[in-house]
Image 1 (cartoon, one colour):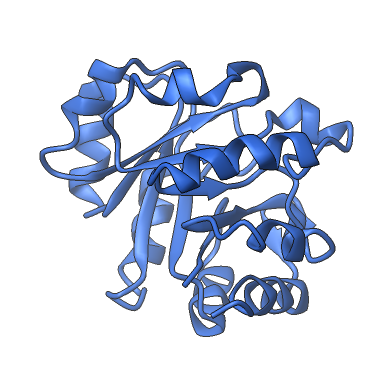
Image 2 (image 1 turned 120 degrees about the horizontal axis):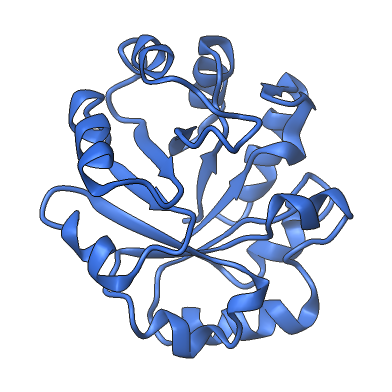
Length: 208
């Protein structure tokens, strides 16, 4: 059963729609470097109205540990996603209380060596924002083959990076633990397209 995470949530309407369409997790980005940044208060206003069974994920980039812990505790987050250069020790610090996702990019290949250093719950494979702007995607045959090896080795893998309704069917063939999407289902930056989001979630879960 492939899980779906809708990331870059900035408003209540998108959050409730994603939940109603069957999204398993929602991502809130707390890095001001992101065009989908959301403040702690705005995130709280959304989270307070969510179905309690929806997983709430906080996305952080090279943030001070104390700040991450404060935000995560105040908002009652379930999962922490680290999108920067966080060390294995940094990530391990949070494992006593939260599930942890560590993100890896194209330049982190070969992935087997890098991921072996991290004792986290899930590994996400993504493409940096500037690469996505150039039209690059994670779904090349070469990259998917490498990620498939990690899946077969028993790692929980989340695939992100340029996913959309046109290429999601290719990704679910390798049976990742989850897929993650933000820009691929938007009509504007930070605003999801209702129909596209519904189609994406439906296709991602078509293998169930």
